[in-house]
Length: 427
Image 1 (cartoon, one colour):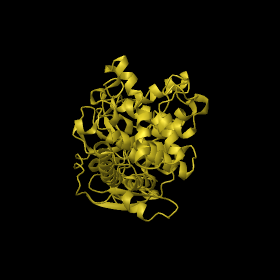
Image 2 (cartoon, rainbow, N blue to C red):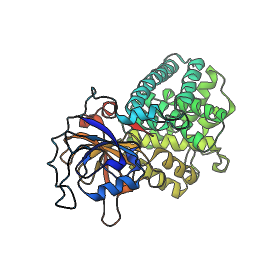
Image 3 (cartoon, rainbow, N blue to C red):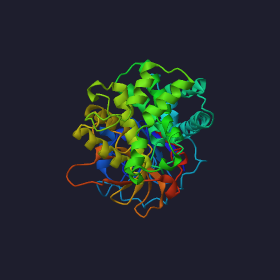
Image 4 (cartoon, rainbow, N blue to C red):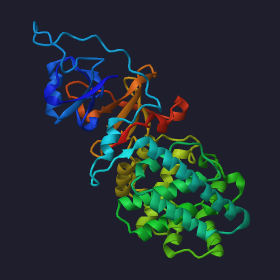
């Protein structure tokens, strides 16, 4: 590839565009490498504020190439050969170089690097949670210092990485061990508490309560550790004692703040009085308890703890919304949580109505159904020669455009998200 940087004033039909001096997501172009075939393309380039572009002179005209003058436009150039498939050895994309030179007030994220780093960090946290809960169940000892270490990591490491942590809490099979559930509830509780403006001390208490809220399940028979729809009425009655059992057990091991005790005690109380324990007035439920209740419900829906069948993120959020309308959950909190999560969370692997597949790289809070996507597979689910940024907001309204029809487990499609996003940066 013979690249050349030229001013926008030197661009002409017949050139092959392979780079611009701004984010592609701020332009009306759904592809970021293409042959300039018509004068309309020049108008679009000039109209979105681009000052310089990069051209490939092996695939299109050079600055000094002679244009035909017998027609108003240059004769069509033969289509370029397929671009080589992007691999880990490709040079750093121009977007990365520009990010490194941006002022400190503007920051970008290397998406693949962020996801890989957060995945590793979360694994360390998960191991810590496993050690805490196993020690508690086997010896009755509560390693409060280790609890504080994990929760402090959650408080610190989730800052500026909310979307990556949310992405790692995905649909999965229910595990009676509850390590993943405890970490997910603790993490999401902190993120939602921050989003609604709770103080750091309250967020810290929620993080601790999230890790320990189901400690009482270690004090009920193992035969009850299965999806709730399989339990008999008598088994369900025993299951519903776990908040009190857990709190009594924990307080025998170590002191907990009053707030942590309250959150654990109330995390299954419904605002319409249908939850448990039944002796707690729903009108007195604190904001932290409401957050823990909502987040716990969401993750149980994702893991299939209720029905035995894990729900997708979208269906889980729909369930929360319906519970908010009925008054079981705090409807205002549900709305904030849906905005926090996003119907199609960043890093989701999605399929469009066209059959094409891609990775969500950003969400629009104005329209949660239309995130920004990096398309990586064509309609036949084959790898594209080169990923294509797709922004719903640039589509016209004259004709119906593509829509997201499903979220897919990337591992089942053989997709490694961090590798697929290796050369991409979000602004």
